[in-house]
Image 1 (cartoon, rainbow, N blue to C red):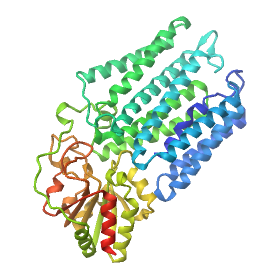
Image 2 (cartoon, one colour):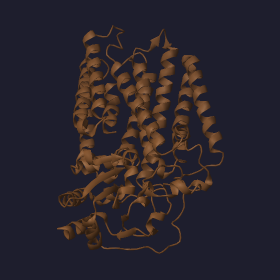
Image 3 (cartoon, helix red, strand yellow):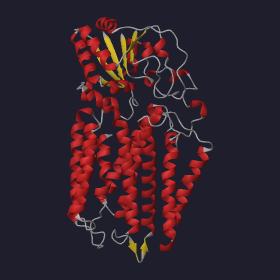
Image 4 (tube, rainbow, N blue to C red):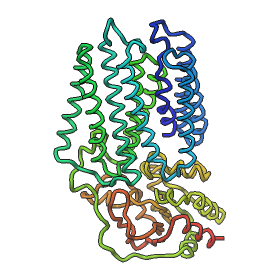
Length: 491
């Protein structure tokens, strides 16, 4: 995810096509530099296929982007180099301040916000090319070529969808908007009609004469901004990690379309890599959640008013324990499986959790970490947190690799997770998370469940029967504080 952000962010910096204004052939050294940067991007994706090589992969991505941006700046012939460097400095300073201040708990909404900027950049680049086609080498006679208009229209449309969709995703992830689906009447018909209108407007824009294009491109842009909102508001909180990945893919395709418009090889390569990798990740996550890929990208096509989540169920009896109780039973265990969730991120409890796991391993207890594909608020959220705490990669397992081991586990230690362990996904057809594969924590001999209080529900808005199981002990406290108390009791 972080690499795709790295690749997607500098669209504007690559937007100046070398020699476009003069119509000259591209310098072979420029083409070679872009090719080398593309190779580095591919090596970066290869490196990110494993946590052990992810840092190397990120470095490859940074080198590739540096080569691409420097090559474009050196060979540009549109804007003043000083103005560009000032813009880069201002943007870089803003990004640095935001990155240093942002907490890991706010990383998902930051990712969504960055995606919106990528989409907006694609829209602005497309409009710049439309308003000044001569400088971009797009004129065929006295008008823009039809093929260039199609590429331009698609780039603007996808960029606008990415922007407005990412704004809604940011609002939902940051709590500024309800995480429950917002279901408009006749939304499917509205969405399909709007998408059809965008396609028709793109075709008309490509065929129109110079004097007729302005109203068409304005209408296309407005409708694309609108459909971005309409596609994301019906999607519920449980599906937001897929939405983040999907919007990331959209930003890549917008960049690729702009690359074709401007004749910039680096943008085409970068956009294609971002778009394809984001689409593949979205598909994998949909399979992991038992969701229809088409349903999600169509704006929750399968959702209805009965599946929008609900309030917590009427309070039922549960068992509450203390840190001392948990420490005693953890010491007696032979195998412990830890399931982290967003609550761990909120409490910043990953370092204390690592310390607890180390102490248990010193006492001869086998400790493993179970990561659900959609745990947290974005793909890989829990993996990043555990890596930050230097949890060994070999101790971290995906759902399909560890779910069968819960029946042999003495303790399932749930810290801040909820929906990903909720058995309603397997039993309640009216639940908004029905069909999503979840961890079989009910098969463990003992379950410890850390959450702040019994009053809250998961992000999908449904209660969890695990709270009330006979073998469950609720540890009601801030996650970091509770784990630190367990560590003290283990010492």
